[in-house]
Image (cartoon, rainbow, N blue to C red):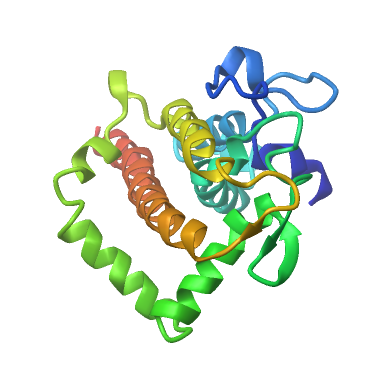
Length: 223
């Protein structure tokens, strides 16, 4: 869906390493709220309202809303989906991933995960998922409640996720990855833990968001 392209990311001013909704959430022609965090708010609203009245059910495609919300919560946790304006979130930074020519954004979208699958998980995505699940219940168990929570009883809180991502982009994604760089083991081994933790956080937060959306509908139905 070409129209949804601006909704997968939010670019921030180069090297400032921070995110502000009012400043950053717009598309390339300046239309406000057309960015990944704006889309998360929008589709959360659609799902909430869609289960409250029949008019919203007719107005919104709730299956599409659920699919977009799930996708965009994943996107906002990828650090370079909250990257810099000047390099389009790393898309214009040409690098080599070992011997393969690519761009920095693609490294963080797929190549770190693909290399991890081959190196540590016998090319089996189910094994990788099980490893991340074990970390959630063991190594990260003390952090899960803070990952789930949104301040002020909000249903969803993507601004915090975006702020985390741009900070990680500055500290890890962009560092030692200038144009023409060959990224090998040093980069891979130090960035993989970040990627796996962001995957875990996005899953936990999507689940928590859906629980808040649908638990509110159950309470309304009980009334």
